[in-house]
Amino acid sequence: MKFIRTLTIENSEREPMTDYQPPKVWKHETPSGGEFSNINRPTSGSRYEKELPRGKHPLQLYSLGTPNGIKITIMLEELLAAGHTGAEYNAHIINIREGHQFSSGFVAVNPNSKIPALVDTSTKIDTNVFESGAILLYLAEKFDSFIPKQNRHEVLSWLFWQVGSGPYLGGGFGHFYNYAPTKIEYAIDRFSMESKRQLDVLDKQLSKHEYIAGSEYSIADIAIWPWYGALMKGKLYNAAEFLGVESYKHVMRWTDQLLERKAVLKGRLVNRSWGDENQQVVERHDDSDFDGINLNFV
Image 1 (cartoon, rainbow, N blue to C red):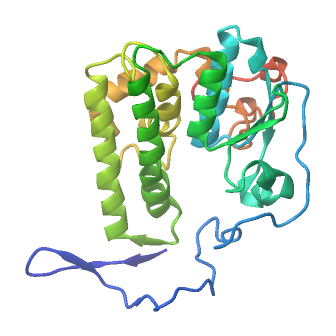
Image 2 (cartoon, rainbow, N blue to C red):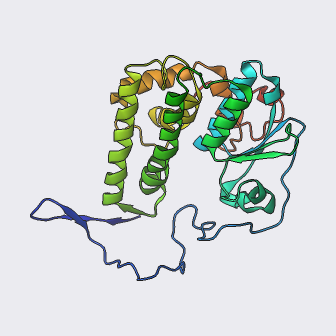
Image 3 (cartoon, helix red, strand yellow):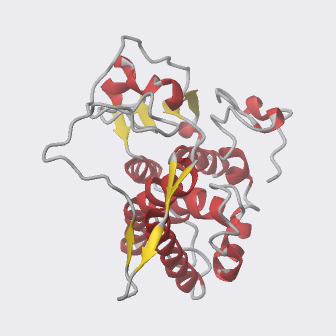
């Protein structure tokens, strides 16, 4: 890979040594490079006709086992574990590397072409919900679970904290550290600093509370854990050592505590199509799909 080096100048500021000058008007003329360059375009909308599959359960989830997708499958497994039979769901895989999110059926549910997307068929007219934070809130309100009334405002504050902060960890740090074809020191430094700042925010909050928003487990924990818990355990961008995550002891305590929940262990494996085969539930249509699956965190 090509590296862009930096130059130390008299005032200790660093300027990237690159001859790139942005044009007056940007145009998409050449691929951007990186792992997703074959599907990235500056336009929205469907690219081919294909209907989405439907299963027998009230809730149809179209997703992939990435952190944003895992939020929803953990939530659904938690609802089922709590006895909400109406939360039975079919989880259909959407392979974003192959562009499944640009089918006409998926775009009809989510015009933004991002996973996850949910269709609730139990309502009089099918209810489409997209954006992971919105889906968590929809399910919490529908089943009156994991959103405590006494501190609802705190739960929502932390839910939207994750929605706003996650892109800096993923699209910022994760992209430039792990996916970008060129390693740019300025970009990696910029987003490493922000990622560590976010971990510090969480660590200070969890030093005072058992869970993210207080004494009760909530959708705030469910939203934050797939990103920051995975980072703490070395499962995100292979960056645990680089970011020194071991110093955030309260975040690690919380991360391990959630790994004691069976719904978390199950949810994190749904719509996964990579890694050990005995830890893949590529599609989930019934609880029996977990038969023979190794739920242990490895």
